[in-house]
Each structure stands twice: as structure tokens, then as C-alpha cells.
Image (cartoon, rainbow, N blue to C red; front, side, top):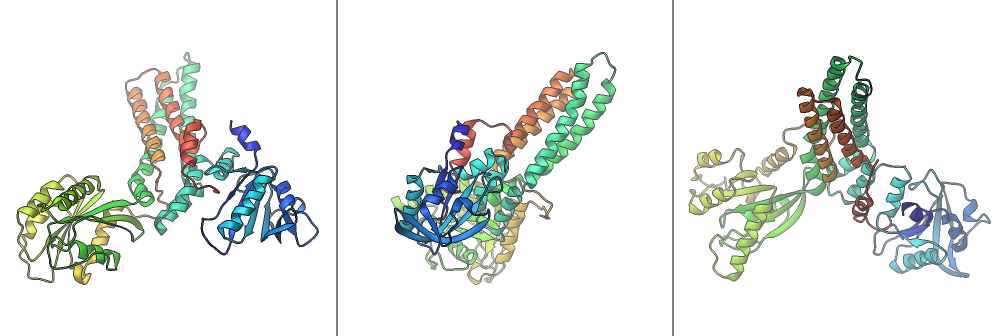
Length: 460
């Protein structure tokens, strides 16, 4: 099926929909240059199929002599192109109508409309990039912060793939010793292979552990962290949201219960994409609307990666505070004591006893907000210093494959300690290699590819 699809020449609009100065229609496949010959009239006499690779030419897009648009056409010949096929890119005006007419012309003359992610899928199938690099493309497009972009660019450059390949080679080297004992049982090499396998296994496990160390942080940078602000009425939740956003988003009044529903915003806190939710501070509903607001707030708390529980420094802890403390006890929590500009009456020692991380702020005056941001970063990075050499695995599929491989290596170590036949140990190593192959795309079911590339936009 893949081979049949690869014979087609595909076309799509590769720029975002909407008005713009420039839009791009991209073609890939063996008929790309021939289709360009039929629709593009250059200023010079040379036709597109005779253009040199990586050159740009000005001309007009025409349909039976009728000018459709002015354009600049770029030729990129195989194999030195994104897809390792002949690629043509037509830069024309960025209106939907102009782009649509140019695209329709390419389809009229033999191209097929590309499916989502098909250009990148071809780059993978034609061996230009591996599957991990292909997945990095969509992560780059969707990156919400500079830090997330850097992680994705590192994966696209092949850093993760190179490390996975090194680990895979180590596993194959170990299998050589195991296969020698299986194939030549009459030779007395038991002691030698046991030492080799044990030493190699230790090295591989250390490499896998190092990759998995950055998995939590990598996933957060890729997908964002879900943070919920909760607290009793009038403790300053809306003021805190405004301080973090550095703009007036929530209405702030001295009337308790002003916020009657959840308010959600996305923000960038020191490179971390944060989906932050300001919940209603109502604990006892007065009507149906408030009852639904309470249920929604509790649902957000239940699903949150991190809860910021807010206390009023000028008030003693009451039953509402204690009820909330009990409700978030099993969550990841940063406790925040607000209104430190007022005379302190709160029992701070009780809060410190309930929660390991406590920050004191004045949200209304944006005082110490940076301390809260630092605490959030500390939670995400878990005390790690992110040097350029530190690798973050951000894709959930990759993380699961690494965990599966680690589990299999744990079984191999147990089998080695129990002096089981080498066949049992070798099978665990082979299965671990298969898990790593899933990351690189050395073996893949068709439905996996469809799931991955269906998430792409058309034209990439």
C-alpha cells in the first residue's frame, strides 16, 4: 500500500489558512516538474523541468493562457529534498482564493491532494528521517514556548535517535555473547559471557534511566502543565491569576464569591507552557449555578498536575481552609500565603506541616510572584540542571517504549541471576531491541503510522 501511494504525485497548500502576503503550494513526486511545466510560465525561455535544483524563478501561473497569479517557483530535485522526491514549491499571493486556484490547477494536471502529514510520512518512508524525527516536526509546529521548541528541535536534529541507536547497538553486542553460548554449548564460555552480559546490561540500564529521568519534564514542555488555583472565597485567587498573567483577566472585588465559574488561561512561565485555572471559591452553593461551579472546580482539582492552594495571611485558618487542605492532600501542591502586606494572623506552622512547599506573596501588588514561578519551575524540572547535553524525552509513545525496554532488561537481569538458559536471557534482549525499534520506526504497523501522521496538518 505504501509503495502504491509513493507513486502518486501529491500537492497541498503548505501555509496556514487565511489572508497573508505569501502562500505556498507544494508538490512532491515524480510528476512535480512536469506539472510545473504545464501551469508555470517563467520570464525566461527555460521551462521548470530544466531548472537547476535549488533555484527560484519568477513567472505566472496560467490556466489555458489565462493568468491565475504571479508566482515564484522553486525546484528541489531528489534526493536532496524534504521528501527525497522531486519537490516544487509555488510561492504566490496568500489569499484563500488565489491559493485554491493554484492548488486546483496542480490537481487538474495529475497531482493528488496530499493527506495530513503525507510529505513528512514520505520523508520517513524514503529514509530521510526516522520516525522519532518525523514526530518532532509536529511538535515544532505546536511548540508553545522557547523551551518546548528547543526540545523538539533537538529531537529533529537526531539527538534522541542517536542515543537510542547507541543503546540498541549495546544490546546487539550483548546478544553476540549470548548467541555464542547458544550456538556452541560445548565450549566453556559461561563465565565469560556472564561477565560480559552483566557489565553491558548495567551500562544499558544506566542509559535508559538517564533518558527516563527527563521524561516528566519533557512531557510537560511538550504538552503543558495543568495548574489549578484553589482556596476559600476572597483569598485572592483572581488577583493571583492576574499577577501571573501580568494583565487584568479576572474581576477582582472585595465581595466574596465574585468568581462563580472556572477561568482558564494559557501562559508561559519561564519556558514552561502552563494551563492555569482559577476556580470558584464557593464551598457552599446558594443556587444551581454555584452548585455546578463547585463540581467543575473539584473536577479540575482532580485532573490537575499541580494545585496552588491559597491562604489569606490576615485571617486564621477556618473550617473551609481545613476542608480544602484535606481535599488536596494527595495532590502535588504548592501552598501560597497571600496578603503578606497585612497584619499576619494565620497559623503558618500548620500550613508548613501540611505542605512541603510554602510561598508567601502579595498578589495584589505582585510581590514575590517570581518566588512562586521559581517553585513551579522546581516542580517541573525536579531539581535537574538542564545543560545542553541533558536530553528530554517528550513523546508519550517514546516514554512508554523506553519503560517497556527497561522492564524487559530487568527480567533479563533476574534470569541471569537465576542462571537460566541463555535462550531466556537473549529473548528479553531481543524484545527490548524491538521496543527501541518502535521509537525509530525500524518496524511499524500501518495503523501506528496512520495515528501519528493523522495529527499533522495537510501540507506538512
